[in-house]
Image (tube, rainbow, N blue to C red; front, side, top):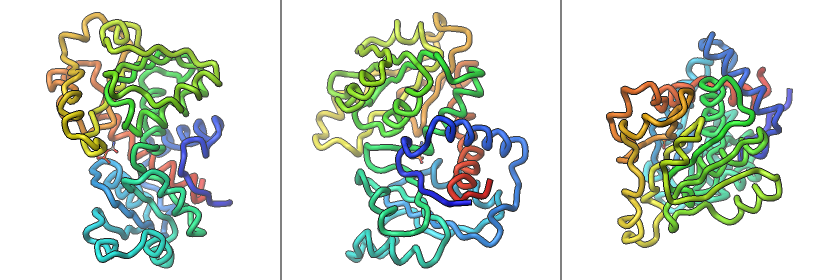
Length: 302
Ligand code: CP
């Protein structure tokens, strides 16, 4: 079977999304499968991570593979001035698959053009986070029993939040209604609005949370992305825009679940954690099964 990269969520067709989600279900039922025996996976993280890097590493180990890599640019030779392309060319000699996170948009695509190995984008700046999207879809499917015709309310930093950008593009293939809730300063970039109009997807934009929560099947909270702001004062102005509290959940649909890619700062109060609406820690666990599925898919092992 042929290996391929996962750089943008649109690198996959709707059929491939469903295939990866079915594989994730298979790995959830049977997590330890020795299909990566003899393979080496490199995790190159030029930007901090807890969930993405460690769930990828857990996924590789559960599949019987081995891991090399670095968790910060400062511990690699890029801190001495080595170019990104020289790093990619070099590490390509040491492994079978590259998993890359970088603060600059487009770096995963660039890496895929510099190496013949498959590349998985673990987040590139404010652009995309396709593996997060697949685990979000797995979580949506698990909690709602379907992906089609759902109302998805996305809250917070819709300007810089890469998880939101790739989730919108993937879920658009399942006829959703979107509610986008953000401060004016953190509205969804125009490109996504154009994309939704071209694909005849219903969406509503508002600064107000209550109605958008009441009609939602999924409330997808996001943190305000401090590290992307050029002006710290802009961050200060928006950082407390939405804080979800347990008392706000009483008027929501019985099936509604709260998702969050994490890390959270203060946008979900800890009193939500013990309610039956909170699903964000199970969502992070689903990341292991989904990333096992993604690795198997890109390497053509399943
Ligand atoms: N959701 C996510 O990307 O988390 P990390 O930054 O901890 O990897």
